[in-house]
Length: 387
Ligand SMILES: *Cc1c(COP(=O)(O)O)cnc(C)c1O
Image 1 (cartoon, protein in one colour):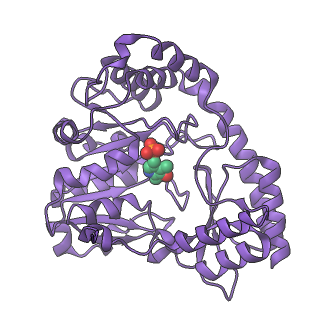
Image 2: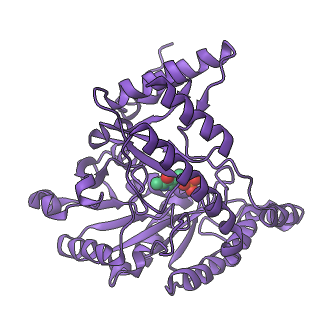
């Protein structure tokens, strides 16, 4: 028998990390100590109070049955309470909030909700790969919006082709940004809102790093912009904020028609999030300050240490007070790929080549701070010695 993958799988862009993955596996099988600064997956455990809540809720047989695709009222009320306290945004739990099996699920599925064959989605470059892949899976076309350092990695809306803008169905944005770590103000979101209104484009803002910051100014929500609820939604992820990447829970909030359409789609492809996990996530939202504070202290310390070692090596990086990443320039004479390969071969350290996030990422690499202080320091020392 011949198993031919669907066109959408066959036509996936080449995965730069596959080759690196192969080299890591080979090295590890030979007993070599490879340190990965590649993946954004918190090394710190989920706070105990959240785990306890899951344990308790898991013991209740009422939680063993199918959940609702839209989420438990208790969970959605906790999200609304959080949005009010954290961003001063009022949300109706009934119509303006939906649970997700992680933000990634919502981001991937939103394309199937609004994109038809040939429809355009406006996508930042570089960016989290799911925006593009979701679009292509749904048969849509990608129009890239370059993020440039000289523009502090904000989108240059004037640079978008006017004809495409008028035709485009959806726009993905993400601040604090992965991979560049850039942040934006609500003024910038307001510019996005007027652009979206003018061109009739749905905005999907990915706020996965809303609560991962070290400075005195907190990142804002897309919904802080006037009129944002008329044009879009925001994805919130508990993964990075509360070290819950393995739990698979997140939510989308904002425009009720968009939320309702997403729910309509989801009812047909999944059956929601395990109720016990929703209770645990509600506990996280209710005490978000307590549960996220420790993380940000740890990441700040790691960020400062990394910055000072990079300064010492003479590697340039973008300065930001948010996310769990450092976005740095590869030294003269290297490409993203050749630098990642050099570091892997000579230092046994994995960094993510910037080009795996899009064309504009070429010339950069990303360091993730989700690794124990001593290992991070060891990895950076090894990079230094390899140059
Ligand atoms: C990690 C990450 C996500 C994934 O969030 P989950 O809730 O774990 O699915 C989404 N967007 C960005 C930008 C991320 O970095």
